[in-house]
Length: 217
Image 1 (cartoon, rainbow, N blue to C red):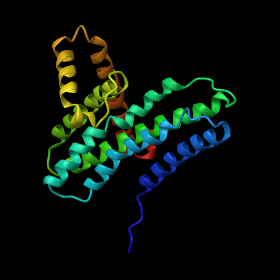
Image 2: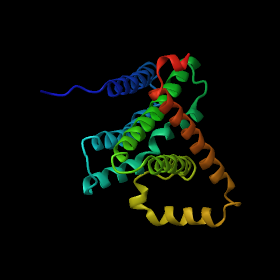
Image 3: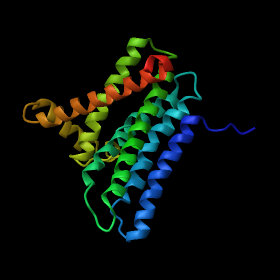
């Protein structure tokens, strides 16, 4: 018997489909491809969620789970990266601004939610093997690295696969930023603040998940 999708998976698919439909309707109505990039970038944002979902079927650390974790961490910044597309929000007639606002906000929400859900799934998997403090340290480190990944994607214009195709470029750029932190203060300010924002959001949602209704009133 085929197992049905969990509730969160159904809502994620529905939410992503809503954004894609908004974009498609806009393209058909205006013959303008301004927001078509949401399709590709939401696909990239889905990859870490697919990796973490696959992890839920494993109960031990082996080559497969290490590969899934590596792919998950590699593509994780693609999820919150979608938030930065709010920079593209502007009046583009004849579409009203409120319609494009729906596109950029739902797109940002989908990217953020995909990243958060995938991290929760990875955290659940790691709790099988690690203690609470180690897992929380991993979560926080992942979110800070995510902030750095978003920076180099948005401003250095690297893609996730560039770590395979252009590893020397990324390594040299990162070493330069580490060796000259004050010269590259904007890199570390963005990384720290974006990572802290993600951390606050993540642990807030964690509290909501564990709190009962009476505690929210």
